[in-house]
Image (cartoon, rainbow, N blue to C red; front, side):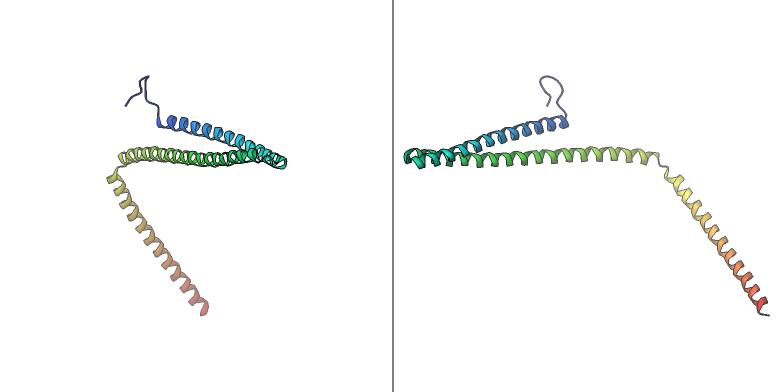
Length: 160
């Protein structure tokens, strides 16, 4: 599915743009919430002022506004939380994409290595190594036995 204006954007670019949009929306929500909190403080001060003056009709109307303002503040907090959840999901998608790309490159490297490896040559090399290693161990054992015999001979001469 191509884009009308040219190539389709890569997943990395789409994820980056969406993350920017979410961050922008979170900032806007935070600004609105801050404005509502200022309005809430102003309403509380006005309610106290009108209550002292005995204007209960105005107090009742402002109290309803205060409840409505607090409800909106709560809704903005919920929306911010949902946006942060969406941002986290985008980050997870981005991580999975990076993992998939890494696995793909590792698989390609393994294919190249497997093509470059000459199994019969390695098998022969391992057999040669095993044979030479066995010879070396045998020579070490013979040298050790010879040294033990020499040492035993020296000990017997010293005892006499």
